[in-house]
Length: 210
Image (cartoon, one colour):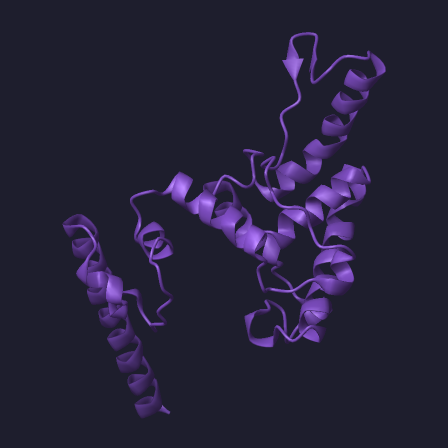
């Protein structure tokens, strides 16, 4: 949720044109995969097996979530964002050339990314890690609490101690959450277990026909 905005903010800073953004972003992301693996982040890295041959990139997977959390401000999908960059850069030049501030001819250039995103580490492609600094964790927590104050996620983030659980319904917070959340969590548990049972039955049927 931070690596992707950092990547695009860097590419925007370099004014990578729409015609080249797809290839340069792909190279950036696959280079990040190698960096994360070298820095010991193994299991949590998307593309740890495929590496540079990865088909579905993390930016595609997280694009929607970045918008939901209010980190990505651009309203369209990833390909629309790529196509919009030439216009985005030209608007910036027009504003600068006319010695105006962000407003020019009644128009305002809207940023593509949330303004409070923490600064990336120096030499991102050499030092990137999935470990969060205190400042990065605080920013992501603020985004979640701001966007989903009544969610189970927010309730967990406000807990005074960490608690590991394989499933959210095994978390100690289950006993203290509001009734509405408790009911939703119960439905989630039922759905998860039913689907898991269906998968087991399906695999059994496949093995019996082999």
